[in-house]
Structures are given as C-alpha cells and as structure tokens.
Length: 146
Image (tube, rainbow, N blue to C red):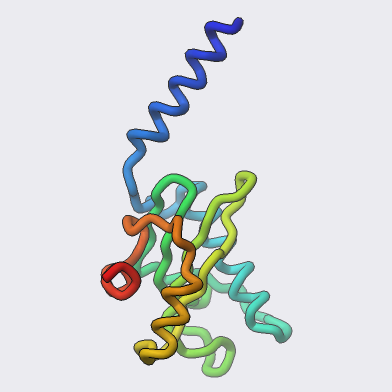
C-alpha cells in the first residue's frame, strides 16, 4: 500500500512538473468552469439586478496549472451583443486561481483605456506575484513584467 501511495505521489508531481500552459477547448469542463467563475464575478461586480443570461466571447484564455488568464466580452446566449447599459462597455481582463477545486478571480484588470502612469504603479504593486507570465495576454505580459 505504501509503495502505491509513493508511486501515485510521484506520478502527480511528474504530471504537474510537465503540464504545459494550454487553452481549454470550447465545450470542455475546464473552460466551462472558468467561464462560470467569470460570469459569477461579473454579475456580483455589477451590483444591480441582472436579468440577462450571457456567455463570453473569448478573445484569450490560457491555463497554467492552477492559474488562468482571460480576456473577452459578455454576449447574449445567441452571440449577439448585450443591450447598451447592461454592463460597462470594456474588455474584461481577469486572472483566476483554482482554490479548493474551484476557479476564483484574483485580479481584475478590466478597463476601457490604457492605464495612466499612476494606475500602472498601483496595478504592478497589487498584481499577484505568483501569477505565471504564461497566462497573461501579450499587452499585460509586457506591461506587468517589463
């Protein structure tokens, strides 16, 4: 029994060491879990009753172990835009971490413009230091890790 546990631990560590950053394919449980966490976060951040079912038009999604980066826009279930004023008109850029088997947003860089120098300093100061560069869209990779 002890040998089996050691072998299982070795296998799990090996898989973790050699796991590569990837983009979950549409329809996979991993992608759905990330989008569900995003939707929950966006609805909670909206701070008003939300009467629309929406999906995300994903422009960028990358997973590396227990970390994920996302960039995209919410759309109606049929792919059409949400009506004006339902949500702010901006690109949603969020970073997530899997905790206890569930994805949670740990950093929200959503915005409608490029950060000012003052904002840039604050973003760099508060951005999770353990977030892998591999999950960051190109702009944010350059911006956060100059």
